[in-house]
Length: 523
Image 1: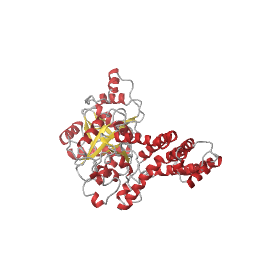
Image 2 (image 1 turned 90 degrees about the vertical axis):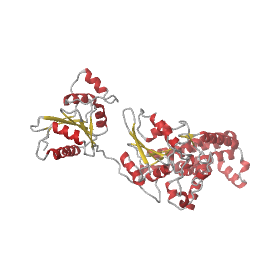
Image 3 (image 1 turned 180 degrees about the vertical axis):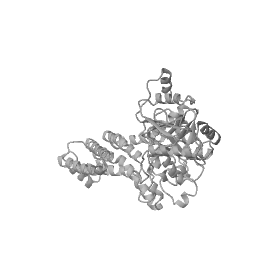
Image 4 (image 1 turned 135 degrees about the horizontal axis):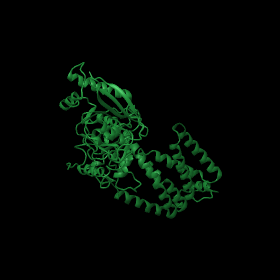
């Protein structure tokens, strides 16, 4: 049996080392290979130079062998690995080797070398390393590395033990009917949620590591026979170009691979629902996940898809279609209602029915500001309250937003700064923007609303039409991963219109894959 004794636990780096060792330590995380030395002290000197000034790095020295004369050292971050995990790994190593040489026998370094060289690593959480740079990377990723004196290889155990959020109900995509699982900040759990729903070997997952200091693990998945070959090749090309970039969150990838950085329209979709991601994969999409991020990125994102919700497929056809039309109407209201009011009240009062016009004039009597500045002021206060509601603690955020809107609206009317009809217009605009299921497109409406208001204040309905034409031209020109943003509306693809304006019955919709693109073989 392996005899061991725990030596001193060092949380401080070694004393000043030679200049060559210092230089080597600085290169520890680069890609050039640095073979492991057979001398434990040389390896420790290099690692202590790399991890110097880190108070949470642990070097746990212990001895083994017949007379406890053979040295070994366990190296790990105490902030990432728990102590009970270390003890379990040592016991696992002891049981693994003594099973081969016989119980009651002391394990020597030669026994370790012979066992692992001839039998490999049977422990599912362990691997063998022979490169110092790889050891540095593994320790930084929260793993336990064990070095032995007299052996040019190290044991690497998956021992990370960090508390993460548990899988629970989605926060931003709640539904009345349907699954209630949400992704979390653990990449393996998120991949498991997808694998659990896609039980096919055609679901491929590729892993890559971000560059810089974070070395964040990024995963992207697709269904082999469903994704378009040209789309996948373009996506992989763009991902290759960002391998050396610091990646902290999924939105970093969205901004790095999008076609137009200054477009107000989102070119990829977000979701925290595994069922939504699986539906997108079946449509030929590519899903991107990042370690430490609870959301998933769906690539590419088409304009029509931002009006779809996972609940559309859990309701009956008539109900889902009616709700989708309601979202489209809400989109138009949130985008144009303040502009329409400004244009009609300023330039086209003859288009307003007489009774309604008299009511508007009576409400605006005594208001010192023109309609445009009145709308601009109220929209500014509404956006300010909405942003404050997001930043405030959740128990008080919604209450403060509601009370603030009521108080400010009533005070503005009483002070004669805004008319009651303007308060109604701004409130309806805000409510309509909340009806959009995707937050990204709702943000776009908040941006585009103001140019439309300016154009309506300058040239009335004619100015609104010109602004609409510019928006339409931009959307028609916009692409997502090289694909037309307005597909399947422009270019028109009648075979793919089954789930755009109408949501046809599932018995027809599920008869064949609802792909965005014509399938092509992968290169």
